[in-house]
Length: 160
Image (cartoon, rainbow, N blue to C red; front, side, top):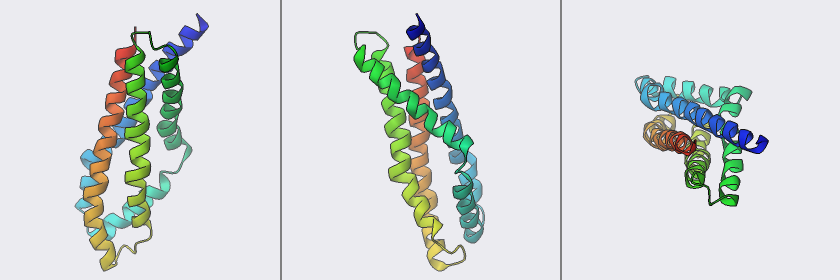
């Protein structure tokens, strides 16, 4: 009974926290990046550089990495109890979040952020990078948004 209650609580946590991540990414994709794109490139670069520094805080880390921890636990539980009807949903949701959110961040968004971090906002190179950055970063962010949203949906479908 205690294990079952913990499992259900962890699934609810995964639903809510994955949806929260999807919302954060959705906000960036639908209006933050658009607003930055409307600024002169030096202003947009400087603002994004500031965002990429201030994002390193306990609140964001909790919102971003806590679902990943829940996903690891739920994926293992799904594999150990594969005969349960909800196991497929738990495994797919976990993989969506881990690969589509954490993986894409590390392989897609972070390298772009690192390249932008070393640019002088007023440089010609910075302006050239900025136009590619806006397109590429937003594309990968759309992927993260969809993955986190679909993960939340899969976790919801797994509930009894």
